[in-house]
Length: 357
Image (cartoon, rainbow, N blue to C red):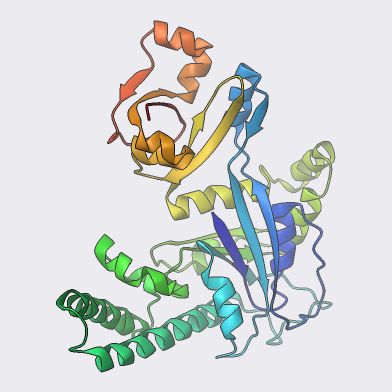
């Protein structure tokens, strides 16, 4: 899972990036205007993995991971996205949109005053403007290609035109593309365009240390959109402390968990992701799949050979295994279920694939 961190200059994007990645990327009061990316791969904190590792004492423990891309170069001006910048944003699975809510005279706002509702709308409109230009360009090409190609190609282009016209109408009405419901077939027709306003979006309101949470009031009610507030500067400082010192400061400021955990949990929910586990003396490992994935798809996530030679999946919930203490005891008690390839894997299940190739 790759998440692109975007936001207007001096919104605190890199501060949030450092808070999420325990990074040391430089934060400045002035945006350079250069198109550049800071990237970090972060382990997904999961106490279930920790408890399973305590049980099995494996040679290796592997957590799921998230890649964060801090994308610099956005400007607070309409139509300012360069093709290079658009490409960098479009390659991400979801966007983490940092919106400035903090006040700091030493860090000037590019539009002179802090106004999170305006800033949020401004960047959303830029995404929609980019998508509209792509759609209009493609529709022009489809008009020129009408009547050309094989019957199958003409049919596909006709279907694509219908979908694009629907998407264009939504944009012209001021709705982002994530608000348009598409069938799986329609989604497949337009997937290659990687529309920016169609991407799931987690809005992070970067508030002062004592600031109020505006997420409920300001988060749009569009599908695939979530909002939460982080005390960005404080979270960055906490991320760079040793654990004991961080716990003391968290208690002082009433923070129950680090922003990293909150953001990752929200990201999983936003993208419809779950975790399943494989366990043994060699390795305890977390795997990430989409909610609703089958046992066969889980096998494919582990290795294509397991999917190709799939016979059955042995399945047990992680907490049931911890309760009985071992896989052998789980078998003895009949808690290890045998499931077929169409079984829908649930979050937190341990899955062992039986296969033969």
